[in-house]
Length: 361
Figure 1 (cartoon, rainbow, N blue to C red):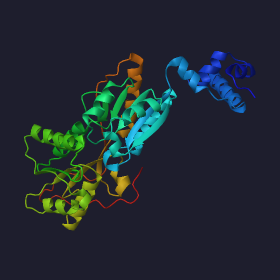
Figure 2 (cartoon, rainbow, N blue to C red):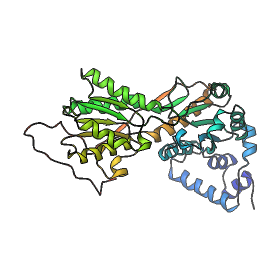
Figure 3 (tube, rainbow, N blue to C red):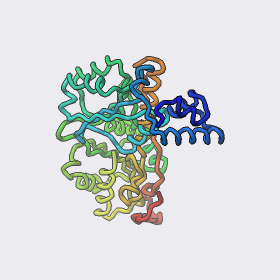
């Protein structure tokens, strides 16, 4: 059984360098002949049970060919959406790196002795961090001083982070509703952390983007509600109170899925039609019509791009030997679902929108 690159090269009738490039994922396979040759080399390597000597490769290059992903085991302190993981894996596949995942309990993020082990014992070239809680200063200092390049995912800071542009997305969503003719708009978020007291940056950025668009238009918001209560089930009750007054808003910008569903339930309980009487836009990593069966227009959180860009940022730090990386904000896209329309006008026909049960992908 062959166990070296030279033996594979001999059987394939190519050079050792060609075999090395193919097996390391660095071969340019842009011609049919190159694709066929690479497939032959991989087949021979598989038949002979070839396994690369990763330790020797790391010793020669000074690189491990792996990135670390550090997350928290407490759901309240992590933001590992599945599309973010897909984005990280997609980014790594382009360079042939592996992903090593380390998960710490919340108390691990407050132990100064934990971080060095994560960085040194995992043998990684860069570290992606998914943690949305508040870190002690000792941890932040250790991460900043570490020789391993790091990037915070879905966290906003002055450097070494990549995050969705929540401010810009909320401003765009609000501008869209204003362009339809709405004058009484409200922003609602019920995601204040009652237990920890910590609120993710996106709560403030989505609120502030909403307020910026309203200010640009010379309009005062009908309401800006940033409160707790979601985990205690107060969402629908609070939205119903908001929609019950004579000067109720005709359009809502909702922090995410739970507020949007609460708004839909509250509107239905009051006999309001969507979008004839009330327009709704919300934020979510996937189209809300796929998640809920309701045709709610969605500002789609670009988590896949966040993961890909995080990988690219670390690669850039490795190429330039510079651990300080500019912060990156990733733009949103808008799903064109039918929960928005011009505000109700006297004498205007009511179209009504039924709940969709077979939405297109």
